[in-house]
Image 1 (cartoon, rainbow, N blue to C red):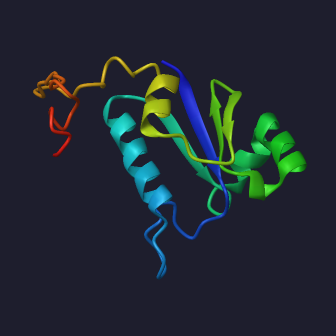
Image 2: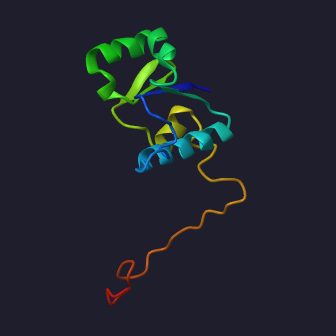
Length: 129
């Protein structure tokens, strides 16, 4: 399994649920990380405010910060290779990076239903839904 590391800017809390404004991107990303960890993914999150030594210890991250600065974060590495910068990866991207896309695409106990097309499109022959 691959190792995923996400380096993010200095935040008061990495969940996104702090202060008067909730950052939905952080809330979603936190849920996505927990989902992957629940399936055994090797994933770590580094916050510049709480874990500056991890930024300094990684040559790739240190070089990135010298060029882009903290404004260019978050930075996502997979096995030490930069795969994304400037935004958080989606759950689908994280699953692909971790090589888990096929493993957890459909949760256990869930049946995937096939969709069929009605004549005339999804709204039927009249075009009225």
